[in-house]
Length: 164
Image (tube, rainbow, N blue to C red; front, top):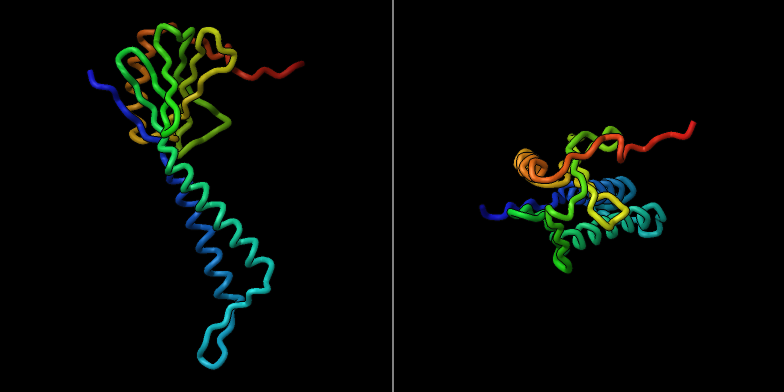
C-alpha cells in the first residue's frame, strides 16, 4: 500500500492576506481625493501605514507557510509529520494510545474532528486537527485504519478538568 500524503491547507492565510489588501485599497480609495481628474493619495495618514503593515505581515506569513510545505504522511507502519526542513516519523509501535473524536473548543474549516495520540516517552500529546488538511474524509479513513492497529485512548485521559 503506497503512503498517503495530506497537504496542510493554506486557505486561511490566502483569505487573510486578501482581506487586508482589499481593506487597504478601499481605505486608500476613500481617503484619496480627485483633483482636476487626478487621483492623489494621502501618504501622511497613520491608519494607511497600519493597514499597510498588516498587509505586509499577512503576505510574509503566507509566503513562509507556503515555503514550509507542511504535509502529513500516513505510511504502512508510521505517521510522518514533514515540512521542507524537518521530518518527524512516529512508528505505530511507539504509540501508547490513539483517539479519534471531536473538539468542542476549536472549529477548523467547519469541522470539529480531532485526532489525538500519545507516544511512549513524550509528555505532550500529538493533536491533528482534520480540518487543517486537504481530503479530510480520506484522512479520517486512514486514521481509522491506524486506530485499528494501536491501543484505543479514553476521552478522559486528555480532557481538561476543572478544579472544584
